[in-house]
Image (cartoon, rainbow, N blue to C red; front, side, top):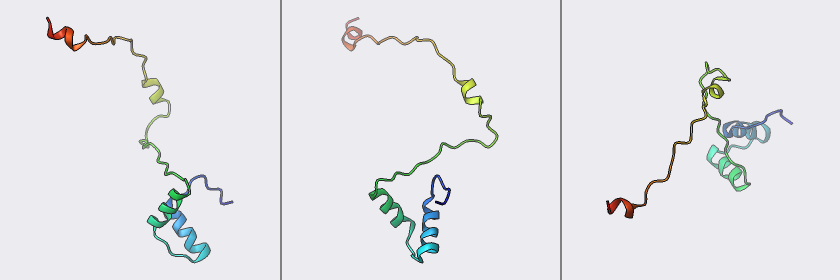
Length: 78
C-alpha cells in the first residue's frame, strides 16, 4: 500500500489525477467518501510548544460540592 494512515481529500484528488488521469473536485471526492461510509477525522489543535505531560498534570479532582436545587414551588412559597 502507500504507507499512509490518513488521507487528506486534496491528496486523494492529486492521487486520482496522477494514477488514473482523472480530474475531480474535492467536493465530489468528499461526497463519494461520505456515501461509502467514511467520515472526516480532525485532530485537536495543539500548540507546538506544549509539553505532552502538562494536560494530565493540570487535571484536578474537584470535590463534589454540588447538591440539587430546591423545587420551584418551595422557593415560591417562602
